[in-house]
Length: 181
Length: 408
Image (cartoon, rainbow over all chains, first blue to last red; front, side):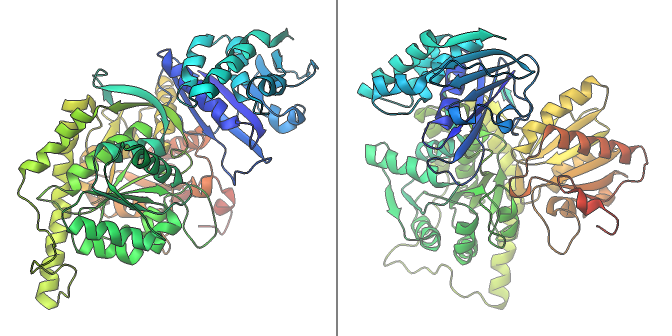
């Protein structure tokens, strides 16, 4: 089982990122479960979500304290201690950022950087990086192909928005820069 | 849970709230009346969407508050309709008088209550205190562990509430936040199978209806013997609900391929020496920890309560009898007692458990996370009790201050 923690801010689609990935895993015959950290949700406030992805049914209903992977949608949190709290050795980090600054952390062995905001603005005209991050996650983690990710988007978008978000996910998959640390 | 057949459904990755809304839709209610409240709001949003799309052919009453919601669905129910509503915490408190009246009128209302801490200390957070605060209302209470069980229990609830021999309202409970917003794969049954499952009710005698022009009193004064007769019949119906629910769960399994064991679900109980008793979303985590403990040779099992009212004492005694030690995990408080509510109630049957020792764990209040570590601690402490070590009767797992000298 992979335990993934998502960090971002209200309005970036952090929770939806985790939902789409759980959906994509289910489409491959695997199992996914995601839920947000609770609070008074509002735009701009820090948001945390959790995702568990496994080849067996996911039964745990607790928050994630020792993630294998951290996904950071908000670049301003890239050096936050909270983001790295409990990261397991051999961990991965996916960062939405406009420059390829490697983050150094003892437990970080692989990093993916994607300028998801830029791609989102180009494709959907809004700074909502979540679907780009979904594609980038699939590529970096190696846990998923891009196809189930694109299929999963059908449950959240339709029409032109669906088409544009599929492009976002594919671009995320193709354009993410990977670094072995 | 056994999952035998997948062909009778399609897997959708949805939240617990969406599972509740879809189940309500599949039950084809005549009237839905509800008012939004965190963490239940998504149910009402989804039902409104279904209604707007023409997917739900019901009267949708967007009331100005929960008290009206309960009164509206009760009236529609007494007129013979199938009804649905949903609430949580403050909403449940605000409809409390109507909740009591609905039970007294024996109106088979089905309501989802997404568990949340109650008014008192303001908390937008998970906890079963709202359930506990209404436990003596005369409703049947069912509790779900995951999003799949939310859907399954709402459907089962209609069969139980509207059964001619029962006619008692049913509340389906699930943990707010932990399940309401959890997205996971749910087998969503097809309409024709749900229709088949619920069609049994059509073959039963028609229940008494309160209709304009007909000479019938509902919720009128019951005095002395009359009052006692109505209460006695209500209590008797609650007792009958236990066997009925077991039957319904078996029929559900025959149609949908998912059976949970009826009133209680037993997980690795057969050879267990030590048992945790739990309910709701914590049970998934407990099962995971039990598997790890089993690998280390610890004979531990879980008894999950799926029904809380009526209290399934016979099923619990049968499952727990002869076990060395029992730890009861409560996600709520029982003011005036040291131990948690379910612990306190189970304690009434202690003499029938064949010498099992019991302790109480209080955890998960106001969103405190019932973590893997917490569950390990509960199992270890219950094992200590089994070995005859000196163990506290009550442990506030996430609040060690309660265990300091001079504490409870």
